[in-house]
Image (tube, rainbow, N blue to C red; front, side):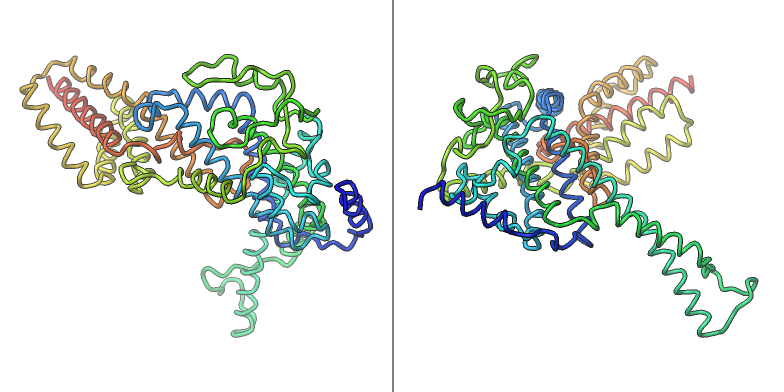
Length: 471
């Protein structure tokens, strides 16, 4: 049977399916919305401005000194994390697929593996255009807006269901109290047991019911899964386009003969070659932007492809000599943030507030770092011989400021990354921080030395400031 015949039969079988009785998303609304949020965030992070911002972060002093100056290595880290995020979203989509009536959607996990391998199997390319390829920029943006709308609705529904759960729990406590002791006058009610007016609970139930009707909760699974499958394929194609020229082994954008009207990034490769510098070789700009099409850019054996993706996944595991490998990234980020705050409070706040912050900072330090700070301070006192020059305080503050200028940015990105990956932020649709911008891959010895320098500088600045005030 020829390829056209296979496509024709597939289209015939799909066209004969009635999707009217497809189940609704229901309780899986929040998992679907979290996957949508991750896809929208990934898509936004591959925009021109975000990529240029990433390149600037890769060349920043903090990343270059603590993590690496190798731009190719940093791009591999960025690529690996983006792929890992896309895999998480695809896994969530795959969990919804068995509920679909569409046979292509039910086989999405295998379809996604084929796309990653650079080759689409016969019978799974018949509806590839329907899954998002060949779309215009306007169509893609419309899908993104729809997903953002569904994510916002799911977030609101989650909040209202939490509120309803609290009201119903309070109502049940009151009912239990009545059953055991009968009606109790208001002035004799036990502490912590408040009466919930029935109209309040009823109004909240109505609000939740209305939000369910307006959100993913009441939508057909096939419709929502198809929307997310389109997004998964689109994001993977954009990743190929952005990282393909720089990351060895990653499927590049398709050759010119596969160009279509679907703009992965308006303006083509020129977006990533203009206004940028660095040691990385860049290909010449293309007039049009390619897509992953029926004829894939490269065809890899499945085992070869899987090995490459496993290597990329292992790249995200921080080594034992890094801050992330020691499990100290968040702790050190908090220490740096508090040290920066302490440096500002020395001149802005009173002595009492500064003393409390110094005590808090000291309690956060690991024992090894406390020892290093004390040893460094003793060395400073011996070298400076108890000099009481008032200008020394300002000199130490300037030295601390120069270090914090680059160290605090890495700490802020670490805290941002942690915040964005909390459960409470699973509906976050804006571009997220990447691990390479944080302390995760930072050299532990260099990071600790920089923190010690900051703490010693703050201590010396404080001591000289006090001496100047006494005199």
